[in-house]
Length: 456
Image (cartoon, rainbow, N blue to C red):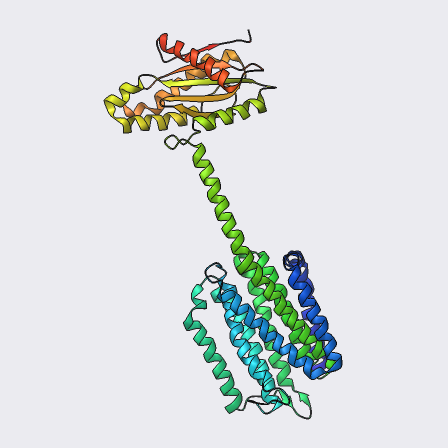
């Protein structure tokens, strides 16, 4: 029965690992590329450690335990010093857990065979190891369930709570008759396998929580999932092959160290690289916003004088070859009287509302550039289908102006001068021609459009 249970469990874990690997391998490749320097040093360290296992197994085990403690403490320190820059509360929670997991691991180390400073029996050491792993697995699950969006999980109160859990665990191991996990004669017992199965189950629950978070798995979630898989692999080695050869223990420690290395790489990406990228993105966004503000007339929210010329020049370059381009100069009739009679705030409202109407000038095509030339003058460049459509288009424009300002009780009209571009006209040439036509509209009675077809 023990053998059948072990086989079923191993097959189930292998299937889960395969399915999740298909979801995470791209993110892992990306993370490996980011941490290439660390990976080289870490790989050399693991090779040396693996070599020591052939020379002296006890020294290997001790070094592997100390290395795990070191990485756990490093993860906590790096994350602790990045609490201002990172908003990843889940990672903050996990890092906090590893401080206290490290304390239990330290007690396990100093109770190792030949040391026995706190715990004197192998059973107590096994219980301590299981307590440390349960705290670790529970920390992941708590982080994914409760603390992923709550920075209070990184507060002093919570850290005191973890410390109390460590104290309670040590108290239970010393003073309470807990189930025997290790028998000096038979080795690890069925209770040990059950305890490890619970730990594996908690890690699997954490993976399920990752699938449930926000309806999708982020790059961070996929990387964390791979770390959880390594931890499950380590516990499978410990729970189901602990009474086999020493090589399974070596593999267990190596896989466990790989999980710490993976978690450290996640920390580097999340609390060091991502905040820098976030700061860069904020500066880039701010720079983009400042550029936009420098191009826009603050009252009418359309292009200012300088930007209008740049945009129209680009418009000519893009469309002139295969289209008929017009440039219109538009002046509000008697705008000074409107300001003098109704006030400048009223005049500002007229300018704002007229700028919206300009986007609806209909001369056959919706592609256009709209800008404020200065004062009560506006400039519009666009594509015209037929020159014969100009009078009809102006009539629609004039009707829309009347409709827009109907509620103000003031008649607002515009005089328009329009120039048609030839192959060599610059923006200044077109403005000059359109300006002449606009003043002809003024002289001829206002509220009209004047243009000259140079293509006839």
